[in-house]
Image (cartoon, rainbow, N blue to C red; front, side):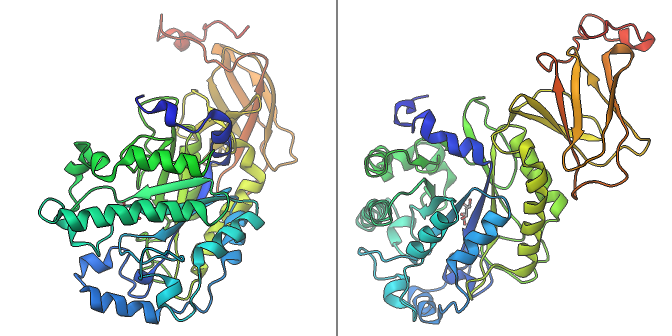
Length: 430
Ligand code: GLC
């Protein structure tokens, strides 16, 4: 990879690999309209009108400590907060913009400062989202015909990144977004954006200001990790760090409480597991309401995930890929600390679970969170049969099986005769 030497080194990236689960928070003036974070543009709100929203931004329930407690309680290990989104409104004390929460809103607060402190108190790694582009500049749209405005937007971007990485102590992760110009994805694909934003210069500055900083791939250089959006999609390069960013409900920004599109706890836990089984992270977005709070039903879902992780976290945190087959009952596998973890959709109705044809001898088995002793045996063909399950799943929604094998957890190679299993004569495991 071209920019490998600008990547943060492996030791600094370790926490990200271990963490697996983070909280994304979208919040800004757009919360007031309940039409999502693209509202200013989608409703074509003139600047003067949009600016008026700042005076109404008076979040009475804002409590960054509560956000951090909710994230930690959900088993998340880091947070990413929208310091400034595409609408240009800074939730911090920027010196290069007049459109900030400190200058224009009744409470005159630096929300980024409070957020950073709260993350640290909860032992969460600190991430900041920053949109390179800003709709307030005509040069964002007319980047060829209005180069002066476009250049002013770029200057603001470099300066604001400098501010965010200078005034808030240690920042662990920088989450860029909005690198395209005039909503034209071609400007991104063609590499034009990287040149426009002077992405390498930006990168060098960020690394110099915050050694050990992790940077996502949305400034025009690949940097440290990839960011598939809205779906679990591991990058093609196998060793590349990645993080799927996804919403819990209808949109990134606040839309409604209760959110009619809120995903169920099984869907959320399954997404988290699907990221972990391909060695990736799940950055789950919670929309923040105009009053600064996270909606109650989203909080309930997050607490349920936290309860599940308390028991089953060994299958998720710091886990690696484990290429064992799935079945209709086994959603997939991970491995960590020399043990194998299989996520089951349910306990087997017949009381027996049949695992893939293992070449290695199984040593032990247990259901995480359960005191019931399971039985494990070897059947013909190298099938591993687990029985003796309790009546109930220890923690909803999914049970997790923990297995240890005598040797490397490999499956029996059936490639020379795919029909051999039919008469039960595949070689027994060594
Ligand atoms: C997109 C959207 C933006 C959102 C982001 C989150 O780039 O433009 O509104 O913040 O995705 O990944």
